[in-house]
Length: 173
Image 1 (cartoon, helix red, strand yellow):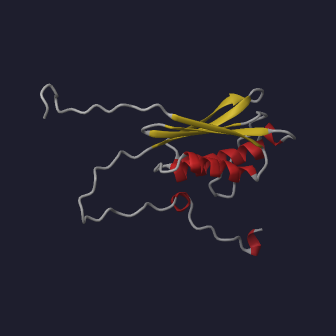
Image 2 (cartoon, helix red, strand yellow; image 1 turned 135 degrees about the vertical axis):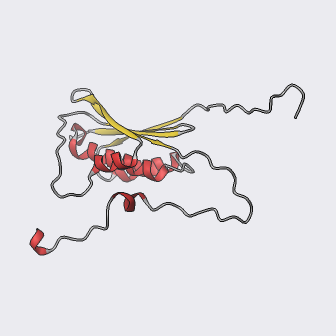
């Protein structure tokens, strides 16, 4: 060790990387939002879950907010921090009609809540809603010794939150 050093290392937090894109509020633009986030979050261990959350939030914006009106838009926003990812979707507001689904399947916000460390909705019907999700990143693992098995990737997010969906029988229609 060099003279005058303590042997400690100090972690220096980096500034978050911030990205946003305004898109027309049309169903075909959810794919564009996913591609934007895939490029923005490339290499991030929480990218798949963050993209799924943002996709659900964007779909809700397009289907349920005033963004669905002619000329409406939604904004996809992402911040990449050292220890978490933040994604949000801003829309054009409108009434908030949250209701339970009787089909027993997870829906948009249920999926977001299952995947995200925290999530919520801010704003109001006049100025617009901001639906967001925070996904914590796993702590960095120490390097693996040479020749030691490195483990396997976790199951995909879709398999973790919903069992295999069987199509309804004719009697269930």
